[in-house]
Image (cartoon, rainbow, N blue to C red; front, side, top):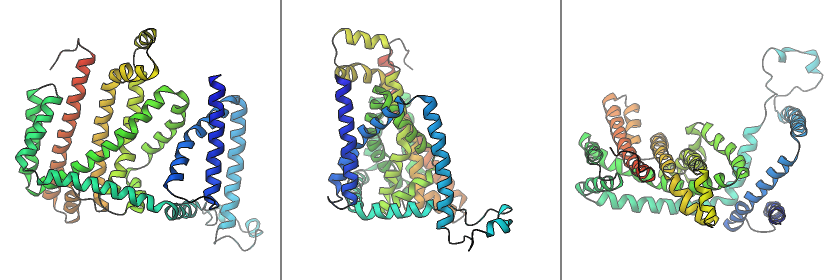
Length: 395
């Protein structure tokens, strides 16, 4: 009965999703944030329905149909490329009489992906640009307020705060705490202007990681609890990790302009996949006997998730946050090319001026900041590991 109900929900969601697309395309209903949100809500069960239908089809028939679709799609692309090209021959008969196009790649055989993407992107910006302006304003306000608080604080207070956080999150390990405090002090000791730059970089990293945690962990949980959701999201994660990091800056610039906000968005896209994967892995690695024991005591799915699976998966999740932190810091440095201020800006300035000393000095400051962030997150992960594995010896 539950399977029939879920199937009906997916079918209704698919119909609503298609209806929203048609309605907004034909301007029957306005293109605002409400209907964009509704599309995203009904997109997930719609994708699940498509995946279910594909799984029903026998594999041999599915492979045969996929080959036919691939061949037809390739032929269609070739025809469209030829017809849309401005450098095609005046007459098709020239292709049979002049075979020079077999020596060099023909200029008329050029798929217009770029024009399609640009046209769709301009249409998307025209419809939903105000929404992203509002999102950008909210992120900018949060970034400005957080940076202002830390910058206005006296530097000894900031260092003492970092030492205190490290001391308690690491399980009161004096060695780790002293090392983190030394690295934090040495950032400003390298060059006084690096102190405020490091705070700007840290603020962007913290906001980016917060967004990754808010969005990434629930997605990882959904992947761990549903094989169909996992199969639908894995290709997206693979694509996000394969695309070069510089490419993430382009949509950020178009949607949010120059500055810190596109860097934060790029951090989310670039650094979130490892957190999602490790959250999924951590929940899946929970001992099945523990899960069976929880079920035997009558634990509901919510109680099992919050009371059993998540606590035991926390070491993996913290490892994902640690990887997310390092990738976020790398992206912030790359984002200096689009006007993002911070330590990456100092590295870029040194390269532009061919000032090797300045570039290496700023690079060393980035390394120290990376060590601070890595040791803080790693120490907390080790503390959780010691709690979940009592037999492990403390360092």
